[in-house]
Length: 487
Image 1: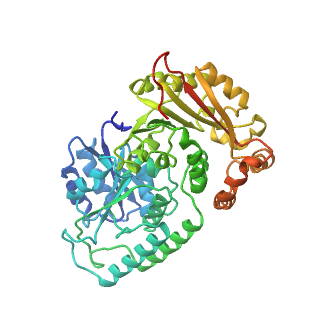
Image 2: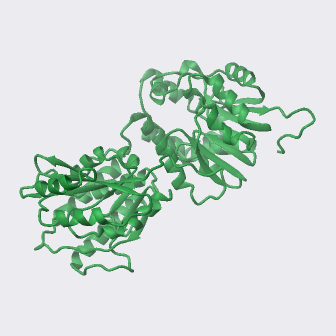
Image 3: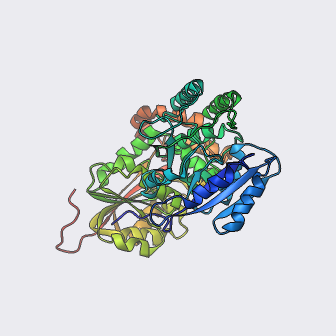
């Protein structure tokens, strides 16, 4: 089964923030319109006049009048900054991918194929064009400007744990849906720092490629100033201390849970002994458990229904030849057909509770398995714990052991074992969700909890109350006289 991309026709939105660029904008737009592109790729151009006091808006509208199907123009009543202009363009973008193109002539649209290729191949979530790599031409200009750029990039890299050579580059291409899901707050040039740090916090896969660069002098209209570097540093400090990476609350909670790496390892260790050689994982998200469970398998199919998650999975797992990415809806029988009988294990962790018809979902898990295969199902335990956190996460219910066992048996499984998991956090879940009615988890609480997982693993089974989760292991019966799973 081949990896499935969530989009079919690649459209790239070229985002053009413009402020007092009447002289250069028409020539730049002509270059963009005539730029060579990878086969099958089309572009739209979104120009945002950021409160210009010259004829920038009129120049953009003149080009749009010639090619109205390719160019759209938006205007800010006052100058708000590059970040604000990019947000305006991004909100209107129709493309699967977006690429930032400054309105001057410093950056060359002939580099589009290199910037887009890692995105089109599904290897990257974002691509930065670096002005400092050896191999292409660049105009030689200010030494101290280059030193400041190097030091500022180094500081961002240190905080974000990256090794970019050019954080402040004007050429950034990315998946539109990813960046739209990130709250972008800054208006000026420090947008470059904010975006980079938040991409790193979201664990996006970032590539760099050398680009041509024809920098302008101050006399020719270069707009970035030393104060912009100061604002960049303040922005770095702000978003290093205040993690602000999701627009929506539900994904933000999942992001916080994804940061508990030791806990995720504990969960993977718990279920790994029951998994076979050919695995289908339902609801893989961005692959936090996938990366722990996939190594050593003959086939590992990571699936989800969210297009953003599928793209992230494809990029994060592109280096593993045994991994395939597929869209599989737990309630859709047709999604399972290509995999029927091809997998000996289905891993379904924290998914069934999101489905109204959970009996149908469990039947689909049973039917897709090869005879003798196993389903590993993890669900939240205890309806008495149901609270605000469950509502935000989209849970229909929490389960009792007897209910889960009966529903799996009705789906056709022979239930080998049902056991509790993660007893240690039950008091905290009850306190946060039922008493305090919180709608998210404290990062401090999660940080402390995760660093004590080595202790929780040793005491968890001795605690006298049920777990926060139930894990059920169900086997699909092999036909009489036939062979089953060999584990």
